[in-house]
Length: 161
Image (cartoon, rainbow, N blue to C red; front, top):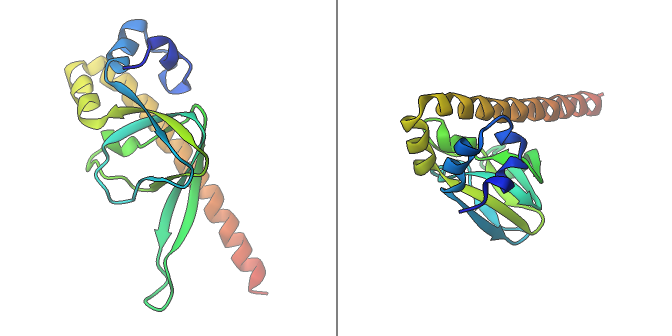
């Protein structure tokens, strides 16, 4: 359990009442990870939605360029203090779409996916507000992915000449 005052510091929970925050504080747990630790891999069951309290986490995608080349890990986003990650915990099929690897010693506030979904199902208005916050996380991730894709496409065009 974490305090509601701690959750108020995160933009993810902007506009939530103390009563609403209490429901999430009651199911939250803090966790620490050393730099270099893979928190989860793409394709694994999404067990937690997380807020980054301290550190940095890379959101990565493994790409395969054929049987004779080793897989390459592409950074899609860098999660910094205050950011949310693991939105797949509340969106079917509840499978992580990217990997998460710490590049610094990191502290997370984790919300168990099953408990979050139960909380959202029991209070539809709260569920709507929460999923609105999730949509903002997804939109930001898509924007960052677009920036990376455009940057890589631009580099490939420049290197073809």
